[in-house]
Image (tube, rainbow, N blue to C red; front, side, top):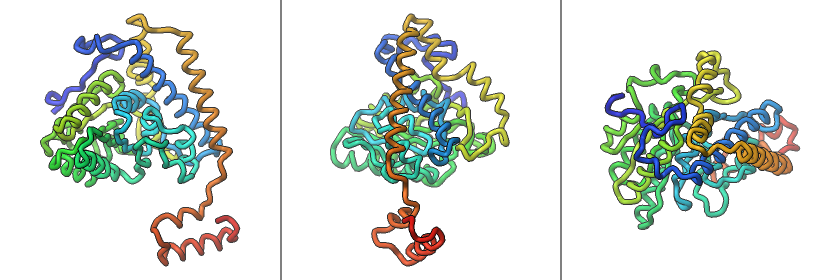
Length: 356
């Protein structure tokens, strides 16, 4: 299956173009757009981990190492498309226009963090594994029924492909030819379970065969390969050709979440080695140096602007009223049912009844 679904690259880890078919499409504007978004993501991610360690936000899911997969795919979308992220795809949401303040509010326990900017179709992050996949297929089918050219993209990890929702979503989308791209970020660990222990399949892309849809594997740390393959899949979807499955092979450097210790289940030395060899930002910098696009003054400016923007978003988040834990009981059903009402009463009694 690895031969049938080879990992596609446009630039190699040393920053050299190895697929000349795309050479003319890689413009300076595109390069700078990718780089600025990826730096912005990394600065945000590191800052968010620091905020969690300081107790200023709750448990956080870091995505450092997956910037190319998220930036390349999100930037391939049209403004009116639909995005269905997981709890690790806030980088993609950032690139698609989500507010940094809202993303931080989400991680600080505020329901308002689930609300995208006006006019942006960004679903709240999927916390239960794979539940967003059928939603993405349904939204795409609705767009098809309305006669638009809007598509949707569903993000998910390798662990999600072992869930029933994955298969139901792909099967439904295949039957109705829904304009949806199923975008798998294969970071090779489903929490603590390595890929080879979770499934017998050699690839995730091969799972497309069961539903008779196109499947492709890309180097998830090659932002160009991710971008152009996602563009191709989206264009096919818009033209009525139905869904596609993309497997972006990547790696998360850190923990599954800040409540996790990855050293318990993998050799973290491998992550340090990957930073030197396959890091998506370093790879893009090598490319920029090789082809005359590298500008240290501009890079310094990009990093400063990202840091300033994120610091401002943190200020806005921390000026927001603190979340009321009691709210968690109020928005499960339209009308409070007795078991939840009883739980709320017990909770309020436990905390003294003065913190709704």
